Image 1: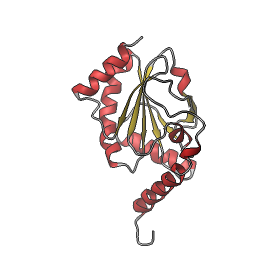
Image 2: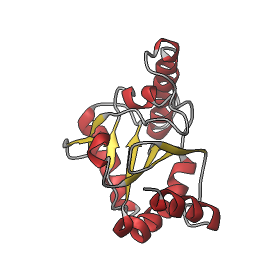
Image 3: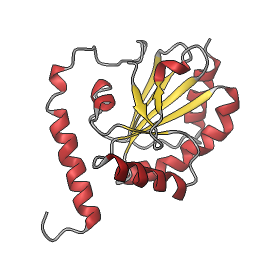
Image 4: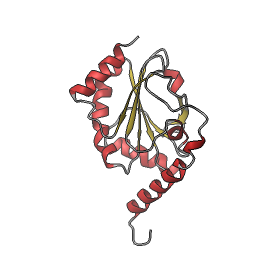
Amino acid sequence: MHGMGQAGRRVALAALALALTLAGWGEAKEPQPTVGHAAPDFTAPDVHGRPVRLAEFHGKQAVLLNFWATWCVPCRLEMPTMERAYRDYKSRGLEILAVSIDVGHPLVVAVTVGNFMDELKLTFPALLDLQMEVARRYRVFGIPITFLIDREGIIRAREAGFQDWTSPDSRKKLEELLGQR
């Protein structure tokens, strides 16, 4: 990593951490999360250290669960479209949980993620997955990746890669997700 800038080192370290974490995927005790099955529950801190538990939303709100990182270019491009969808659908029962897989000292990551959210004027909750426990539970192999979870906690869709959450196809998926009872 000699000769790399600060940002390059962060990306390299994050990629290494993700690769090392993925090495333990085969040992997972839970079934792989799949469409039509219950979303694995988890608790993760937000950027202020407050714990957020997925199960708190069951029976009340549908959840767009997105895995991302501050160094991920497609994630940066996707986030503003998520914010527009959040503003359009929050009153109808949509919650967005953006799980950052950035690694490093917890306080530094919290500040980095918080600054990222502020810079892009994102208002949905950003959670920290410093040990990649949530990513492991969801078998995240690349980012961004999104799981659409209905109000009963069932995974209704899994979207890998950049998504424009303002496109007609994405809006249709969100409408269907919010219409399910």
